[in-house]
Length: 349
Image (cartoon, rainbow, N blue to C red):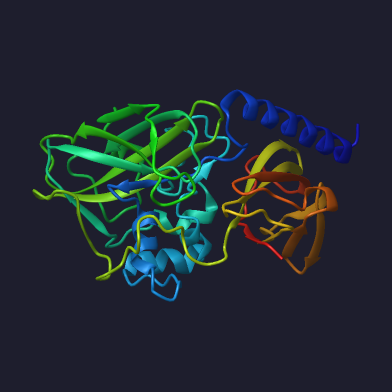
């Protein structure tokens, strides 16, 4: 079977499975999306910091600004998408040290940096009402870890910086609010870790039970007797908590290596529509990492200019439903057993 036919067959099987899940779960086939809002994750609070009445996102916080300079504006429009589609709940040994806050997703690598991130002020040992956005709702488990005493906030977060066991978990909490908005959330109460003082990171992991898709996030906090107050964002930021993110950027693409061999690898790109209306077409672009070249693409049409790659939809997969996904595959000539994974942008025509 050729790679093109294999890709087409895989797409057909994927569509069939998604349809069966729709009937079983009573929901449209979609990727889950979300992030901690209380205590706010870096991407969520940086998005809030950047909101303006004109609908632009220009964060004033220096750490947020540096992250956007590195990862691009889409990393804020898609603040709820710090995910790995192949995560399967894995943590240590899967996400590399220094890349915990991005989940190893290159589209959010700017959030692995150090700096004066927005802070949530908390009281050690107190009960706290956590809120995790449910931009798209799916069942699963939530795990919250905290940094050890004496960790170094001036270096990217490592697994050894975190306490070994989560201090709080939530098992399939119910969604409140309107799914597909900032107001939709999973909510639960839990005791904050005791004996903590000063600055720390709460590290969140959302493991879906109906998919391998897993979400990761860093929430910067300080244990100083506070009750959830946030500092480090510009005055008046935050907008209406029931409003969707502003702007037209409702398309996101994620690149995943699915197989390697001597001199090359195969990858699958998932194109996701975060919007409330269907896409009529899409295109995704990236800079080809050094030493790589495209061998073939299936379920998409690609062009190349220098090291810039653009893949557009073909006729049959142009429409992408609201909160829906589609995929294309590619074969790449590359060296090494761990090929570099590019950061993709996605646009609708």
